[in-house]
Image (cartoon, rainbow, N blue to C red):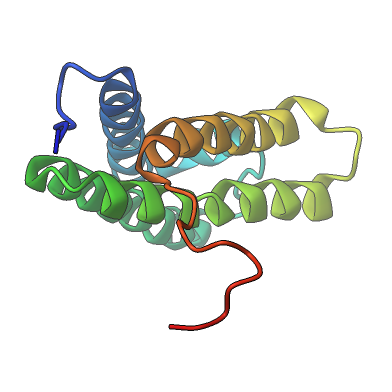
Length: 144
């Protein structure tokens, strides 16, 4: 039986690593300069008190990136793939939030979030498909 390792020699490993570092950068940016980060997100602050929401987003992103890095360090391809796939809901809902706040006229910001969704779907497939194995039980056989 041949086993393959998933590490820095895999393209999908590097894509997850780069995504993790990118989301950590975004999180730190929201913590340090929340007003500028909010503009880049697509929903600017209407008052200085709104910076608290930037901090909430910042720590969420920082945590998400660090969790993915920890999973990468542990080398669990399936765990990384499933967590990464589940995280797709974050940029999807972010895009919906920008759409609700700004309307469809703000396609520049919406497309950033939903472009991230598309990229994450592709990366999730690259990570998970090599681990997927079809069932060896014939479809008509229900005995165990």
